[in-house]
Length: 322
Image (tube, rainbow, N blue to C red; front, side, top):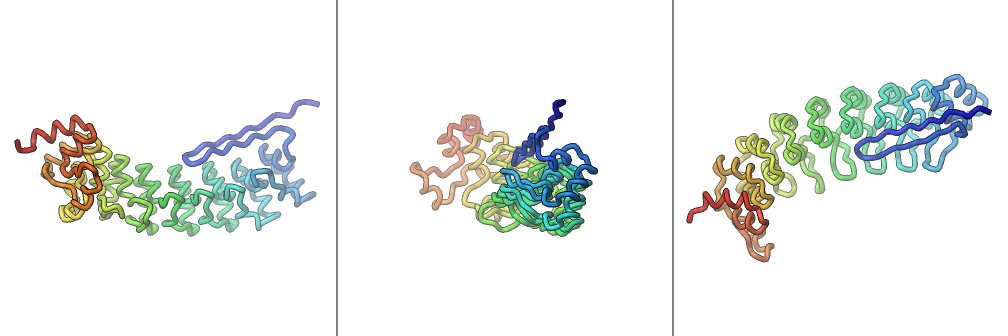
């Protein structure tokens, strides 16, 4: 007997790795799907419909494999025989729709949605199909999912929405689609930061400017503004962009200044921008927070020295009165 060929398909993306290996000894249904043999699969579905329900050790059944492989015609055969499988989950809570989206198979995604797949079912990380589409920066898939009623403000396990993910990718086209669909610019959540703070943290100028234009420059639950975040991470160009659009009153009500954070993390370029914009070199940390440090540090210079931020300390010393 001739050796049967083997099939090994692997897809990798940001939050999970999916690796599946198949050889000639695999289940005939799975083997037909992997080869894209529509006639063989149809014959098997007709002669033994129950064969389409066989589950492997990971909780995958043929409908998952068809979605994973991008075999749209095979998917149609399975769903016609067993329409109730459309939202069946694997042991990792993956639906066929999530698998198809994660692998970038748009025709399969469309087929599943037309067959009634729920776009809001999430995996074990609470990531939905819309979130995964944003992660992969697939504009067409994002639009398609939204057209089928995907919830735009649903959160993943870390508290992020699809908009957070689009901002993290600096993809303003997807940001605009999401905002147009009702994405919240400043979603209230204890454990997550606003999307604008994500842009400030990552130094994404396009997403930052887009969100500023949408009036998203608000403090997070931590009390920190995007300007604080940009200073902390040393994105001096972002700091320069934010200085002119950040409320002085809001800064005064913050428990710490952006200059303190720049000093603490030795972000001398960001500190220089803040000082040039008029930041007070002698501004002190709120007493309620200063007392939390054993040395009661209060000024930006003290923060710089305490953290070994030499360059920033030298910069501050040129401005501190003798």
